Image 1 (cartoon, rainbow, N blue to C red):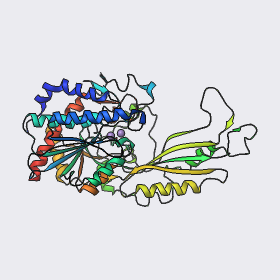
Image 2 (image 1 turned 135 degrees about the vertical axis):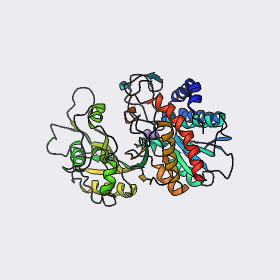
Image 3 (image 1 turned 180 degrees about the vertical axis):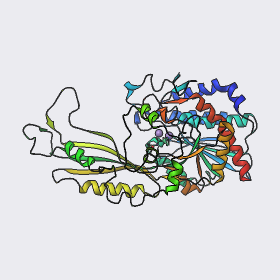
Image 4 (image 1 turned 90 degrees about the vertical axis):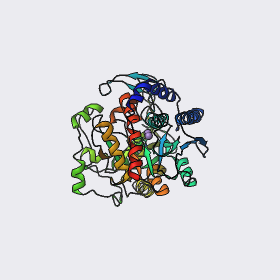
Length: 462
Ligand code: BES
Ligand code: MN
Ligand code: MN
């Protein structure tokens, strides 16, 4: 496979412009108000796949948002790469913290991205990273170098739990048959330190509702004599972690696989600058489970975090009230071998059991997903490693990530193939946050590296 560099150099402005057009459509899967935009984004992705050289492209209806499917078969005897990505994005709020509108992309230079980065919701997660694969396909077809078959499956519900994808995958095992699954929806350690993600955390997401009195009460007339649901909720949440930041839910750690000292030592070799880490997010110190490093805390250890908490009076000025209800949304990041449905149940049982009689508690489990970890002795990993060596001049570091792509574990079970996570985003790209961006260098480097993966994977599969 010839280096894609000259082709990229010639077409880079168009590659950027096309991505910008895609980023203008607010495909927010969580908010029904954007339904038409989500459908329109699917159409735009379909058109881009057709233009990039897919023989067949289709919009596959599901009970939710459609899945865009495309394929190009050159020879049934050659291997098939299945590319997965998502065209939906997170809601952009809080809006007032964006320096430019989230769906009106702009290019700005930053310290880390001196060549500029595209600022827009979805630029990195995942429209930008997904689109690298579309442009890599364009390069390979336009220059007659596609070495194997390719299938694309781009969904529109990743940010809300991928329910329809599970529906689709279990009904289309034949159609989706492949030799390796390739995903760019993760990050890399740093621009000069390529890495391949070898693990993802699972997720259990729950919502809790604490009810005290049957109506809001005057906090003077009743205060002190009646349980305040917000006070109770705060106490209950605080009790979920002990002084070592261990989670106190009985059975929570039962299935957690502990890494060997050797594996932990290997992990510790990955470069990590604690001061830069603190500075980038403006914190005075790191914080977490006793006995583990920052990199361990955010990848191989499970967590429990409140994502939102509300209730009572939050408007202007002061109102003296004991509210009837208090709420919280809580996520638990899980590690391989922990079952998310079991953890959701353990949480529910425990949370209900610690509630004082003065309140009633309801726990509603939301979505979840299993964690994933992959060995590095398979053809896909080796091919990816070679691809990075070719374009970065360095061997990538295997790294377990703290994020979740719940569908990856399902792919392995249903499609029986390995998933290779070639991420090109940086932790500082602010995914899910205001001012999300994706470095132009990273975008183009991804387009350059992906064709090399196809080449080495085909070669090494012989
Ligand atoms: N692309 C992310 C996951 C990710 C980001 C993994 C960076 C590793 C590194 C994905 O779109 C995502 O946000 N997943 C959700 C889970 C989903 C069920 C809402 C997450 O991790 O919160
Ligand atoms: Mn994503
Ligand atoms: Mn995301």
